[in-house]
Amino acid sequence: MSRLLFTTLPSNDLGLLARALPVAVELAQHRHTIAFCSPSPAPRKLIAEAGFDNLSLKHPMYAVIAETLDWQGARRILRLARRDFGGVLNFARQTIRALPKFAPGTPEVWNLDHFAALSGFLSEAFVRASCDALITLLDEYRADVIIDAWNPFACIAARVVRKPLVTLIQADVHPASRGFIWWKDPPPDLPTAVPAVNRVLAAYHLPPISTMGELFVGDLTLVLGMPETDPLPEQANATYIGPIVWQNLNVQLPSWFDELRNDKPVVWVYSGNPRYLPVGSFWADSSVLIRACIDALADEDVQVVLTTGHHALPKEFVPLPDNFRHVPFVPGLAMAKRSDVLIHHGGYGSCQIGLCTGTPAVIIPTYSERESNARRVAAVGAGEFIVPIESARHKKHVCVDELRAKVKQVLADPAYTANARRISDKMQTYGGAAEASRLIEDLARETSEPQRSS
Image (cartoon, rainbow, N blue to C red):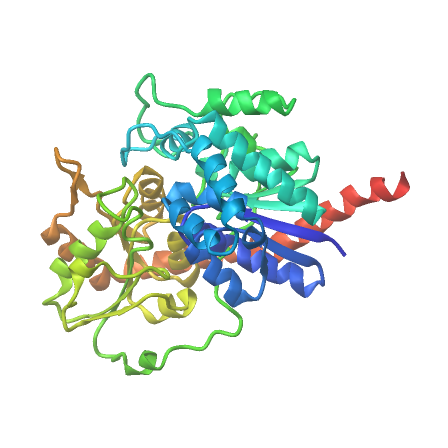
């Protein structure tokens, strides 16, 4: 049996973790040893609920550095200081030296190079410190295979310690794709993190990259979805595995599920993280979605279930209208199957849940990667989307009348549901988590045999 480590981009969202957990469950059932490395608060809850070990909790240096992406580093330092004052001062010094450097924020994120620049990767010290911390973690855990969901630090660390790398990606991340905004040509001189990352790669004696996407081509590259929903050129080095969505096998549906009426449409509104920063706004915030749905649906004859993915509902939205119910987290597959329409922020995992359950969507994408996902859903006839408009003061808003009209349109036209179900049936043939597990086991077996023979 193999020791397998799952890593994800250290963002305080559930989407990337939701694609990794089902694969981990499959592999655990085959008696492999499984651990995760995901330090942010919301993912930590899901990992704990699933019963897996989270190594980031045992390696506070990586957690402190990584959480600066979500501005949680200072809070974590204070918690650690209560246990180890001298040690945490050293953590603080290292963290200050390795603070991320961000390009100017914008929801118009063109590709992975631009995304990395917006996410702090312009700082060579930040990238190096994050990679160093993960290299230490990999050395201590002695993983046989690293399975990554969008964490470039982990992809670099796996190459440094010469461990097989499996990547779980969406097509827009692959270097053979046109990026997140594939429907128009990019402007010149976009900010890019590639030079800073190449300096780190050179320090590790690794070859340079021409685009960040090259880091996510592993020894085995698994692409979610299928060519119709997630197109790539035929020559791309990748294997489609269909949908992967998470729901705990031991899930218990909340009692209020039975209280939902059958004579009124059920609308599931999922925002994900409403606000990434404690104050001000961030280019990926989803609070605009919550405000738009309240304004559009408060007086409509629908039942709205609002969930935020283990995040608190901002106080500005309290009290909610009478036809709204807020819960921080709900079993995604069960909720989607019970819903007549989904309204969400365009995260890839949210799109996959709708397509997997055959539930149509109205999507309010909060930045370009999510707009790409929304356009793919609309292209197969399984939903509609509305891109928020940004004001001169960088505040987003959605046309309430347009949102209300699109929700009514999707509810009234059975073609949206029929198309979502057609895509669901077709995607299931690719095998999903079970097929991903089989391919990972084959790789682990192939790469371990030379070691045994030597």
